[in-house]
Image 1 (tube, one colour):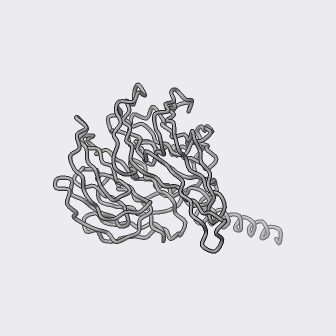
Image 2 (cartoon, helix red, strand yellow):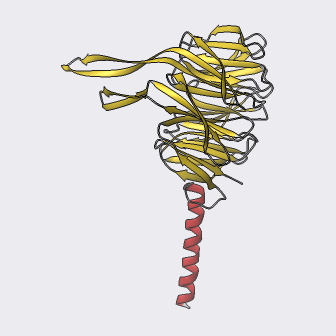
Amino acid sequence: MVKKFQKIGLLVLMGTFLLMASCEYPFFDISPLHKVRSTRVSGLYNFEFSADRSKVVGAICTEPITYSTFFGVGSTCASSALSFMDLSTLSENERSSDFDGIVFSFAASPDGRTFVAAGCADVDIECEPFPLFPLLFICNPVYSGGRITIWDSQTCELETTKLVSAPVKAAAFSNDGRLFTAVLSTGHLLVWETQTWNLMEDIILGERRESMKIQFTPDDEQVIVSCGSLLVLDTRTWHRVKVLKVDARDFEIDPSNELLIVATFDGISVYDMNTWELIDTPQEATDIEDITLSSDGLFLAVLRDHGVTIWRTELWEPIDGIDGDFKTIKFLRNTEMLGCLSHGNELSLWSLD
């Protein structure tokens, strides 16, 4: 009888452990998330999927620079190359060295025909003596000028290059593909009409910070920009219709056009886009670096300093995770495939199917 109760107690204990692991420890592998393929590319520091789901475009540092900082040694990149990889194999089809500087942002046109890489045009290192130790110099990278390169996504050929006054920190196409927008480090928003690539608008946002992003709402009637606060602009007049005083590190717009998911320094916040009221705070965390939402809005991937957590947005429950040292994550359009780029230059594709 004693042994029987011991077995029952052991089963209860195991069941409790499994329940705790699934709810509190998202890196306990109990869901169908699995790695599909991966590749390691020396110098790879940024990537994006093509809209037609046939390619991955990566930014590769071809001229690294190291410099002294207060905490040790820092690094940046003076020149880059673009690598066009086949999505099904992650093998490189084409590589172009037509980008001087750093690619801060990618954008793919919805029709899959055009691909844009944008960033800075020049990188310098400026050094100054440390106040208490004149012989010790502290250096920092200085990014100047902006470069926007427009590519044919099918042939991987450069179509045109546009130079702007300051580094481009964020870029996006409208969902109908008629407009292209770029946010500069100076706080300017530039708008082009994509049929002729004529500049339509140059708007002073008045705010700026490093974690800049721009995204159109699903109906293209508004655009949201993170540059200190979250700014909501009407795309017919380009006037502000709302300012959310929240220090956003990243954000995503739900495909229903009703929810705005924001990653702040305190965690995840969800806003009602009809009233702009805060309606939920499903996760509290202080180390969120990046988020990405699946096209159907069912899954949110959250990048933190120890890995990626996958959340099911219907109930805001973590269902799985990937342990690793990642720098950026992105869902492939109209799929449940997640791309993860590590600090070790490994690009891996994970499936939730």
